[in-house]
Length: 128
Image (cartoon, rainbow, N blue to C red; front, side):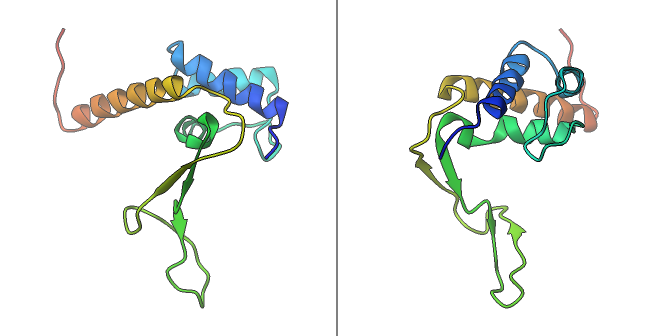
């Protein structure tokens, strides 16, 4: 696999901004302001795409298999794997764009934000 330098720069920017405390909407706005293109060549970004980039193990050098699977070979319709099959991860032979430590820090930040959001939905309040 060969890394596209322009897309790698965009991925690096997304990780750096998130680690600097920027939220998904702020990153979206900055990418659009800079005219950065999505992987499909679009100028308009969505927070879900940025979230996907931040969760993708490929960017730190690990390939994850069985994210989707085809339960019926006749229809060939793929469905998302929510634990039906075990995920398989293997070290890729491509150059990572971010370090494993950066990737794990991003995951911890995302998990803590998710925990706060879910707690707020249950009516829990946090006081400092």
